[in-house]
Length: 293
Image 1 (cartoon, rainbow, N blue to C red):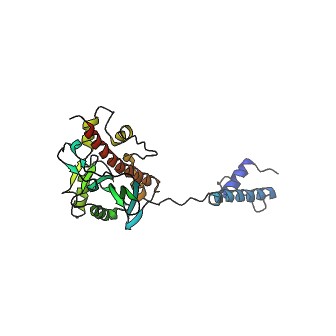
Image 2 (tube, rainbow, N blue to C red):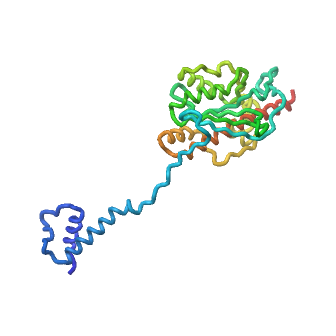
Image 3 (cartoon, helix red, strand yellow):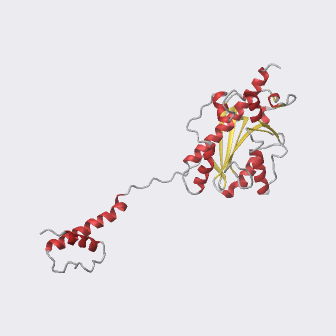
């Protein structure tokens, strides 16, 4: 015997534990066998449906939280790489920077760049990564460019990063950057002051490559952003590069428990930045030497 639509709705409500409306009577204990059988079927079907998400859900892959390098202090990672290349053997003239009487020993140069939580500056902006490159003779790999990066994976690790970077600096170190004189160096000085650590940058010479690059190539290309100089002058094409504007979000996402994939791309971006600075310095020296005077 078939069950009417009204009784079927009643059976569905009973299977879910919902009381029947006053106008509809629940099946009596002596209800027809077909009605009792239908009720049991509905209960089984609803039970399967409620259990299905837990029983059939695919297991989640473990979250990727792996960061490159080694932890040298709680929350602070050091990433190092040696790039085999021919290092300059003679002093580099700084005539390209309007310092015709000055030259610098290549071994004293430290090319650096920071990744920060914003571009506004001030006490609310912090550097979460400092990258640096210098020409270095490695005991194992020989001559080349040494790239070192400091990355903090927690806010509490900032003082340790600042102290580690200070250890890379000597009294005769010459800093080199791209707009670092106006942005990176002042920001780091602020962070040293807030951390109550002596500022190691104050007394150092600083050759900012942005201004001589602008003087020489302004009007040649659409702008003098570092990415443009890489592409047009140095013929460097980045693959799968994460724009610097996305770096703060990638770091904050990791701090909040997210994956490390985007943050690893920030590390790669910073690595290429400091390598580019070393190449750009040599190109500017060569271009100035070849210019008619």
